[in-house]
Image 1 (cartoon, rainbow, N blue to C red):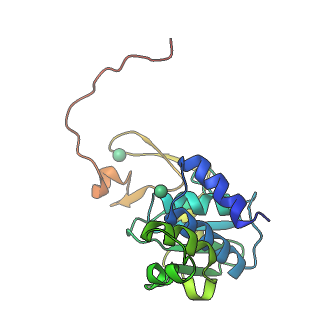
Image 2 (cartoon, rainbow, N blue to C red; image 1 turned 45 degrees about the horizontal axis):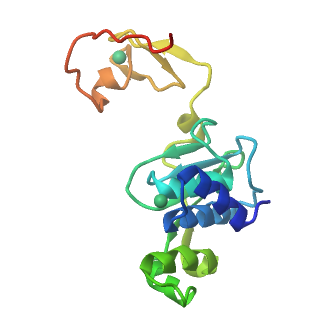
Length: 202
Ligand SMILES: [Zn+2]
Ligand SMILES: [Zn+2]
């Protein structure tokens, strides 16, 4: 088990500096795993963390839990909130943790010699006890863990664009297998036809 100091060192080195939201992320990561009775850092895939924002907060959580996008143990549902949900994928027990609304003000009490707001949060967030810093609740996922993770190794072809879809992310539309983009859930619009790119490798 790493100490908070050790976690923050790792987080800061990836982030180039330490900031209050990394501290919050690290603390929420530790609190979430401990509420589920799970040890950190995780080297297996039992813990799934769903974050409600990206940025500094995410770096803190990653440093604390060792859950990462690359391992498919960290996902982002971007609600613009510094909150996270921790799923024990074995038992499906799920807990959501968010900072209490008064955390910023409370930080001053735990960092009396801080020179400014930023510093009070940076230091205060390291010392406020869990029960005063966080709001925790058991929740139930609206989509099953199985569906969230999908079946690795499964591959299908989109019948409209011909691109390959992995992890069961295809959408069935009137008997046709489509990717999310072709099914109308795209985050981009095509602006030009194929362009040629030069290889950068030699
Ligand atoms: Zn930052
Ligand atoms: Zn498609």
